[in-house]
Length: 105
Image (tube, rainbow, N blue to C red; front, side, top):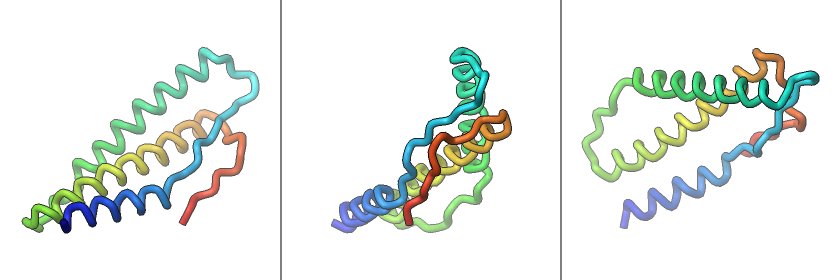
């Protein structure tokens, strides 16, 4: 019962904290170049986020329920970090978002 409650709470938190999808643009860049840049930034950001996660110290908590919840939230943290890294990579390449991104809560 505690597992179900924690997972439901986690899903509610995730829903409240999502970022809207942002479109990116850079005048004069072809569709092929955009695809290549996006793929390179995606690959780099994923590797970097996973590396940063792997370098975190492990939790000493042995409670199975807590471990499951922490694993769930850690996965979410990695995805958010990857999204932030992806955005910074695209910005470094000169892309700008086409709409103002607003973060919820």
